[in-house]
Image (tube, rainbow, N blue to C red):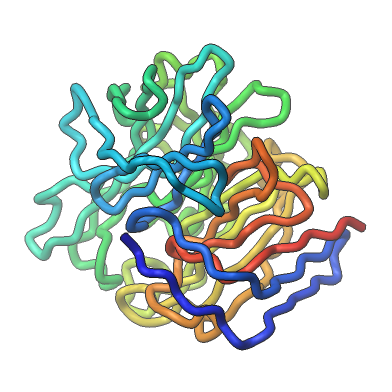
Length: 341
């Protein structure tokens, strides 16, 4: 169990001169119910908020809301899968009660140095997230691994991602981190899959590349929507990573939170950033990310994996309104308050 952290004494606020404004303000401390090492997807089932926390092993906890997780925590069973360890980073509960989810997997024995190259897989559950069945890998880099990479963790691959269903319920959009290959493709990239293909997702995901959605999810090239400034092969890598996306009903916009690693090995956190987009199907529509918290303002380490949890009934990590809790590595000392134009 993560211990409760004390409230920060500094006052945090941030405005941007865009068509919208966001304020970061202190709030009483909350902590997710179990250890966190990724985005933590949430969904509502039978009037309860369900949350999946992952740290190499995925755990499921239920609660009345994020302010009171009174339910039991249980380990998620992952049947028919060789893709261990895994981190569940995104989920969607459909109207039939099937929970579709996606995981980050780090294969072993990729490099003698211990570096790995993550892949992204799909899974589903028919019992509310207690048991998942593997549907296979849907996003994988087509670039050769570079075991000489100096970032401290990855020799390439795709991972550290989130997924959102568009408002028309036509496509799932994957915002993911690309850790190798063409420098123009390194950073945060995007892919999509038709909603109707969720039952058979392998081969149905397509990456965005140079204005088109034609590159295969397995292999295939990418154009970064938030490109690295310094590539992941270098010890001083400078890049956005770990996007967490939600639809904001108050703004009527998509909002993404980003980590920025800079500029030493093992990804020290330079800050938490935010960007907005009217249309998730337009990869060029994202605004230039702006920093909302500096690394030293977070108050503890590691200070990454930012995400929201909406504060109203039915809101999650992918759906929020005017006020949402901001979590970083499973701890929330803040609210995000969104103001439209």
